[in-house]
Image 1: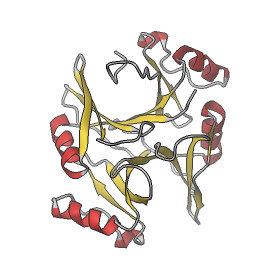
Image 2: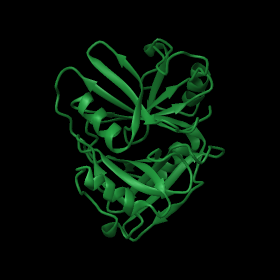
Image 3: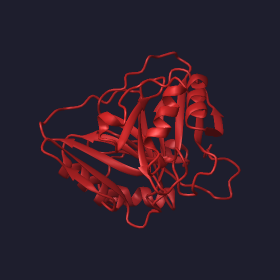
Length: 264
């Protein structure tokens, strides 16, 4: 499997409100929309995103449920050019985005805002990738050794970017070994105090690209991955497994000649 992170899915209360927020403040464009039975999905991303760049998937259900973010779900991170963090953060403030964690409070290295549903959006500085493109997705894990082992054994991920081991927590950035630097990376956050996390339902899933859905699914089963939703259960269009903490991971086989981003 390629292992490249294809998209990250979050649930939102009102799709049009969320679309307006991301289109207005992050200059995202709607790539494609799917109207399902009782739900709507929209793919978003910068206009000039890299071929291996990840998309943001927003899902709205028609049942008007109020979602809980939970604390197992961390944040998405978006890129701005090196040296332009303050300027872009001030631009967001001028546009009326809530002041959540400004650059000064984060040592001048990054900042955070929140979208209309309370999903945290980190702003990081990079010398590559399109403006506002997805840099990484952070999830919290209860056992670092198990989490690192899961992504290493099941998906053949490595730690190519960095790790940060502080006095009370650690961050591990993981991705496939030969991934393009413009691709989205996975950040695993582990706190040393043994806390347990609530998953919440506002957090949806990560999606990983595979070369052949059924073959790669069988390989995951050999590696003792969780048989959560098999390809057969999903009409051989996609599949889902889960990590040791219950974070859902979709497997998707991208057809470059397809007229649609959705495998429906």
